Image (cartoon, rainbow over all chains, first blue to last red; front, side, top):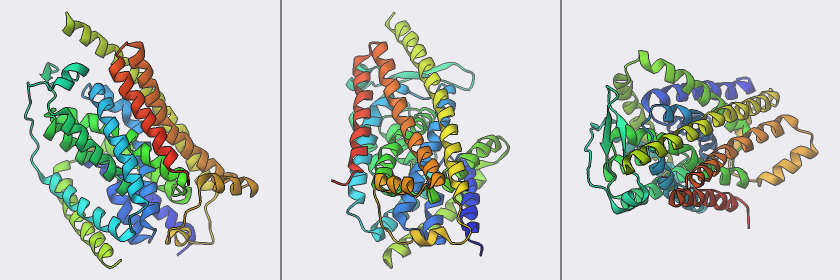
Length: 276
Length: 130
């Protein structure tokens, strides 16, 4: 095989990852890390660093779109970014002392968990009980319903949400993912934010979380343009087209197929972890 | 009255944050362009580049940059400059958000944004070998 074909293959797969990721509402990292490690035999630490760079690029570029829909709660985002950024810092420190096999195992189990989460039924359980911290920081807000009428909501369990965000930050830095699934769980599960608000706010925050560890990995020397460039550029291009194609596709069917793929890939990652 | 004030504050905050986010979009395009140009100009037609990344061996960024400057490897240097611009963008967003909260006299949230900025700085510092 001609040498540059590998890089062009990675670029093409990254376009697919960005396309699929934007349709399914997941980051491209969950697709690209198994491709880099299992298919191209790149060390998982370089794959994680490259994936984080692509997350920073897609999330920063799309921040304006997340705001325009009037669903993002800026105050909640800024508060919870404290948890994710300090969590990412711990995740980066942990990664220095963890063997590759442990990273493969953790990634495999996280993929399995993500597959289960993608199958769960999502529904709102709005709260009208404001936590004292929420009152102090004026976190309660409203979001427009289908007719554009404002639906008010309160914010519960702020300390629990911050704690879960800290964990999400650790996982993001350790595995090179956006941790959007964990962030949404913290916001709609613990803090009782409406699902749409949780998703939009999570997407808005992902870039800052990923930057905390991506910057550290870059300075440490783990980010290589030969890997990060095709991944980042490919995912940016793919997510651009994915966002436009989303209107004409059936995400439910794609989601069900993708869950099967995730389970298979997670099994391969776990096996690779077990065999060192 | 309080509700009305908060709604007006939120609307102002939203517009300023939207402006910052649009600015970031152009930043990402610029960084992406640098990364793309740098990557294309250094594609190796003779070796499978991924073979050299199958084993983990790390060289600090500043050591790599010094070596690339000495070798006049402008392609890789361009790609690295794109990566640095990209990483600087969310940092800029958080700094501007802190400034916006300060301008709105929302001191608690301004403090939160500054704490995030401090956390990012501290995290970057961890990347240096001590």
